[in-house]
Image 1 (tube, one colour):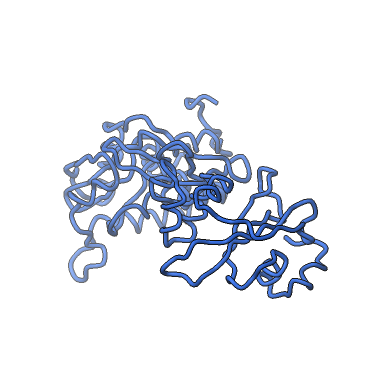
Image 2 (tube, rainbow, N blue to C red; image 1 turned 90 degrees about the vertical axis):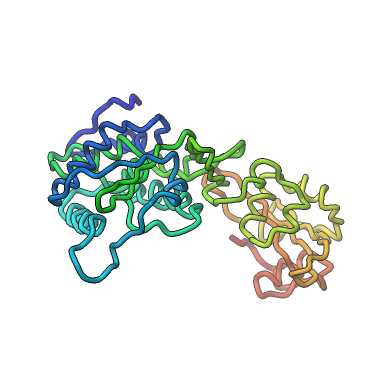
Length: 329
């Protein structure tokens, strides 16, 4: 679909609007500064001095502190803009709920989690696409639509506005219906900005760069975060992980709760921060959204020698009880 296609005013074309949320070309600084200047004018404020930064992270070094929670005196610019935004969102039309998950939580949320400190009140530019409906005829909402089309994150302050460039790279995968996406890249950063600042993600989970660039059993075994370990093993592959980690297969058995699949019980190397354990490798009883069944590993107590006993323990059952299951999910 061409990015120049205009959505129908009564029913916005979500695919067209998402293309702006995910765009990676340089910001249109003229259009962005004009729209922000007009928003300041609605507050009776003169045009701010603009400071452009190459990434949201770079704003940390130059951003004046937010005064939004200060007491006494007139409300600062960012607080007054927030008040107007609340009113806009109350009176304006709404986009489908999946945009919130895709743009605000999956994309903007993971970028925000990568920034080392809170940055006060700010807005997301292109990633405000989750709430800004284009071409409504509302002049104030059209200023926000211009910002979705024109720039990255921005921070309005009294007399100055810090604005970030759009990313050079923004990689997602479809997740769920046609409008749901999540950050994912198996070959490099999922988000990269002009100054080299990056965010790595594996199927929507933010991970350290090594999980994508060089996952190894040694790194996995010293990683404290369970989700990071899971993502790294999935990327490396269970067979490669088992081989690199030198895990010994203790026993295997058909999985009675998942016909056609197998349970495998392995040794695990000792880890300083965890009690001795073993690894139960199983296949998910439910299909993933792409129709595949994911293999997953469970840490189980070291006292188990048979996979049925280990699988039963994970459900609060004995091995004999688990053996009677007709189907698990």
